[in-house]
Length: 93
Image (tube, rainbow, N blue to C red; front, side):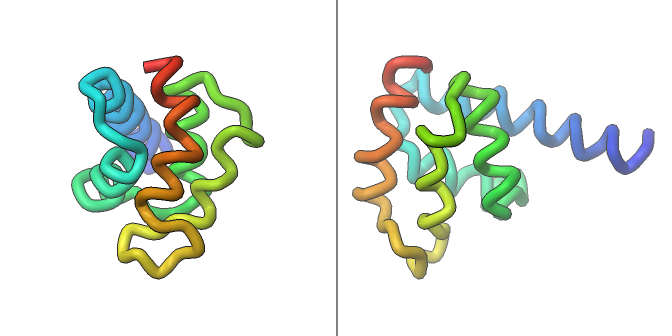
């Protein structure tokens, strides 16, 4: 399996995981933290791509992900990211 195929398989697993978590009522911050810790995906571009595909979101709806970090050092804390992404996750889970 090529490196690209491995990445795509990881991405597909992460997308499926995000969908399941959202359908179980998990907030965005918990989903993002899970992707970072359990899937090893913490770069903003990949997280945005996962949310875009998992929730059929457009970039404008999820660009706020760039302001959040797992360790809390970002511009947006968990409460803020949950509030901003709840509409996207809640309506498309």
